[in-house]
Image: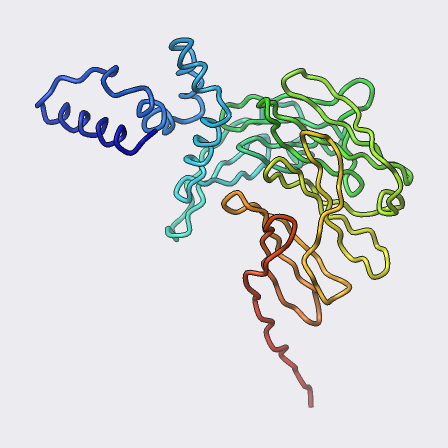
Length: 318
């Protein structure tokens, strides 16, 4: 929407409020109605708005609107975190400015599972991937709408094993939200993708030549950025340390990615997306405790800052 059209619509709204001009909802224009008003609705309100007419259904179902709506409700004043306990799920507002007691809202867990057996594995655009520890079943859950979908199949696809498997949520160019499941058993590895649009799983084929596919590497859960699902993999191979792999969601192929130039052999990393760019926190651990923040630029990495280590406190006993 152009700046001129936005200002024109705002002027019409101002005149209508002050009684200088009679303005109907049609005069506001569809752009300002969608991106200035409807985008501020909660998830349930957006769902109801899709039933108004076919035009609204089409506009509110686009990938662009979903991203704008998610970005709006994810601003700092509206962020929330979830705590699961005793059949109730408590949703707390996340505020760094208010030091007072947190007021929480509570919702019932929509699925039948002991509350102490529910693990939240990862999140993406308001969706959570949940694992039941007693059965290994995977569930995709939207806490705002209370909708959920158990994605495990009778042929054992979608059964998660902690400390062995890895998962990642993402969306492809057809707006199909998908779940990638990396499954490892007895030194072998399989990769399957669940499609929410077709409610089905399919197997991903890949070459098994890299040494990191074999053995017992530790995979992080996936971080989605710009059509690639990134995984940190600790292969426990001498002088290799942690490796970075990317899963291209369109070609459905894995590729080894460049890693920040770290002089230490042993280090840990954590991935995070900030302003649509992939960032990585890297630490070599003790005794040289530092935290480096890197940002991916193309196929290379740029160091943004280093959190200096504190001098160790030496206690002597006499």
